[in-house]
Image 1 (cartoon, rainbow, N blue to C red):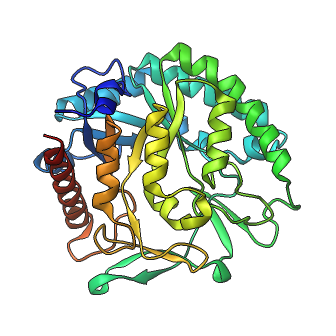
Image 2: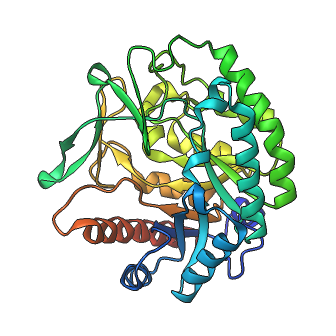
Length: 348
């Protein structure tokens, strides 16, 4: 028997042929993934693909062609990213080209909807993702790490920003909130008309100001709650990166399980990045195997089952292991699938 929450929770990705209720497993593949890549994903029982197309190639026709190509390989496209409209510093900080970037983002959302892709992840970081040198985890595998006292540079794709002030001055929280409100009020009507659901990714790492820019909106629970209330739309919700949430630890204001219960009850949980870390900030962290971090991933998966989450979970940020990406992904997907089956058995 499904719980009451599971029966009531809507399928988050309406309009997808073959969508089914329940926790589903996805993977990340390039748009030009080989036949072997797709076969490997099918062998793992993966249903959904997260992929990307360069901004220069963005068009409805290109997006539709990507969907067809994966369909021929037995997979469905859940998210198709355009990294040029992700982590847009001009939007977050109100730089001179803000309106042009917003227009580019809105065109991207319209193209997704026209191509039959109904979900997009969005991140609102002004100076990218911050890391320090990779560090070893179990068995000599390496994982991404972050130590606040060693942090020097934030990066996103082909851009980087250096301390002490990444954009020449310190910004206030009020400025960031005004800029977010300006952006999201333009996004909502377009997303609703296009039938696209936008899951907003947490800051990585969250909580602490970096380079003079507060991480006050998507760096803690209260910020998320206020941001979703400002959007006031069923189409704007959360891409819950558990790794980021666990990085923040107690400073997030709610545990990962509490966040799942809250966002799930609001029907705002659209996608989950299922990963674990060694410790919360401010100690710093290393991204490690799902069973090797400080969080109880079975408890987290049980919370997703409890709220009736209908959507995709993905591994994200794999460790560097002997055997390469295939080995790391096989381990992560196998572990996730075992947890999904364990929590499903509890409810029957």
